[in-house]
Length: 127
Image (cartoon, rainbow, N blue to C red; front, side, top):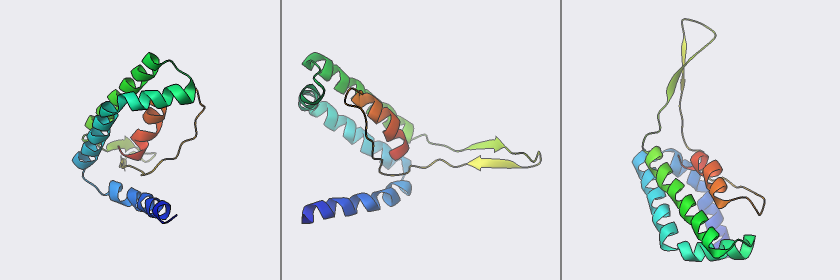
């Protein structure tokens, strides 16, 4: 039980750490996740095979495809910028500041590709 509480407390403090971290550090974190996914691609494919009933070659392709998005978002995290937008008052402009929101919990259908989970939640979480 103590280990679970420790993990939860780390996740609670994670949004603050990520929000104020350097974009290059966030990109490095995603690069590490990419490397871990590639290193353990066969284990992840086995899990998908057992959970979703996909054949192993399809599950392995899904893992590789999802990992490629980790790589993509690792590069995008380095280039997160704001933008200047129009406002109803013509003499004023608004500035949109983009920053990560932290931990994202997602409940998805069993048949939904792991890629979609990464694509939908990861960009909001870390990028």
